[in-house]
Amino acid sequence: MFTIILATQNMGKVREFEAMTQAHRPALPIQWLSLRDFPQITDLKETGDTFRDNALMKAEQVAKACGIPAMADDSGLAVDALGGAPGVYSARFAGEDKDDKRNNEKLLTLLKDIPAEERKARFVCVLALAMPDGQKFFAEGVCDGLIATEGRGDGGFGYDPLFYLPSYEKTFGELPAELKNKISHRASAMEKMFFLLRVLLFPEPEPITQPNL
Image (cartoon, rainbow, N blue to C red; front, top):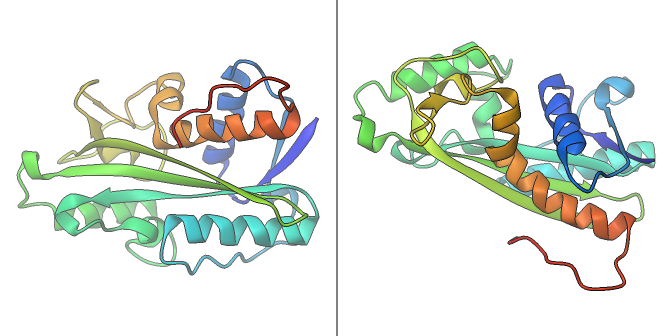
C-alpha cells in the first residue's frame, strides 16, 4: 500500500480523493491520510502568487515534516468579470477565517450588476506531489462554468452552490457527488496525477498513453 498525506484538514477534499481512487481503473493501492492524522502540523505557509506555488509549498512542508510522500492541491475560482479574482485567495476571499458563506455572499455582491453572459468563471486545481527525496510532480485541471445569481444545492463545499454548469443545468452543489467527481477541476487534475502515480508505482515495460498535461 502506497501512503500519501493530503496536506489538508478539509475532509470534503479527502472524501473526493478517496472516491476518485476507488473509481479509478486500474485501481491503485493508495492509502490517503490527512493533516488530521498529524496534529503536530498546525500551520502550513501558502504565500505564493500562483496555485502551483502554493500547492508545492504545502506539499513540501508536509513531506519534509513526516518523511512520507505528500500531495497538496491549491484550487480556487477565477471569475472573468473580476479579473480572475478571487484566485489564490478563494478560501479567504471574505476574511482569514475562511468562511464559505461569507465568501459566497461577497462574490454575489460584487457580481450583482453583472449580466448572465458576463459571469463566466472557472475552477482551477493544481496538484503537487512532493517526495521525501526532493522529487516533485504536478498536474492541473480546469472546469468552466458560470456564477449563478443565488446559491443552489447543498452538496460539495466552498463555491459549489454558485458554480453553474450550463450543459447540466445544475450547480456543483446540485450535482450528485459521483458525477461531480468525474467532471470537476480536481477530477481532471487527479486523472493526470494518476498517470504519474502509475508510473511511480508500476513502471511500464511498454509506453503507455499519457493524458494531456
